[in-house]
Length: 260
Image 1: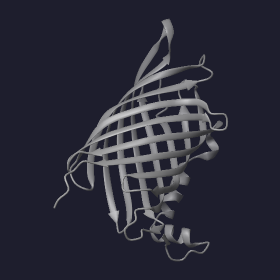
Image 2 (image 1 turned 180 degrees about the vertical axis):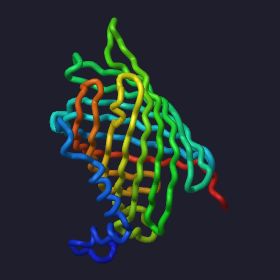
Image 3 (image 1 turned 60 degrees about the vertical axis):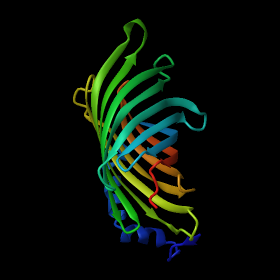
Image 4 (image 1 turned 135 degrees about the vertical axis):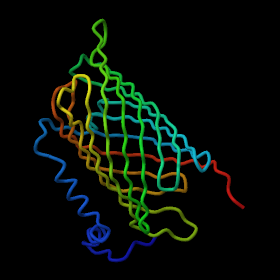
């Protein structure tokens, strides 16, 4: 494995500057109001993502998530399953949609999970710049969320809009005949919502993500990421300043017929 040139202390930041990532990070930091959150929290997210390409146009999507609200004591916070299908119009543009279930645990809500059933749709635009990959993702969600259970069970509908801008660029060169490589990954995502119980609190979340992507084989990669999240918890009625450590296993299956 050959490391890219200029391995000095400033090389990482020089690569960021040359590839115009530093301005992106600067804007993300400005947009992430660290000091305005009321409560501090730390979380651990484990995710398995599966993408199955059936042909040049169609793909199947699946992911399962387990999130802990306190990764030192492994207190359960949220579990989720998402499934969907995607349609590729080119190597750059695709659309997708599907269904997701989320179960969120609130310790101060009589220690039970509140269910959420969610429909989602997204547009994904990829931009290849030499060896760097940029992407824009727009996702809309129709959320049916429980706020209480039992005889007084309440479910409210809300709509959420999400926009993400991300970048992936290599830090190592791949040896001939090998697939292992390391890339830097960064992303910014903002979420706005409206609907039941939200009133005029349209801001939902702001996420700033940075870390590394480890390409293990042609079909498997592992992302180790730090995510800073400022989010407003409607059931708890408070803002949360959340530091998240994310570990994501990406699995890509390709059933397309090989030419030749």
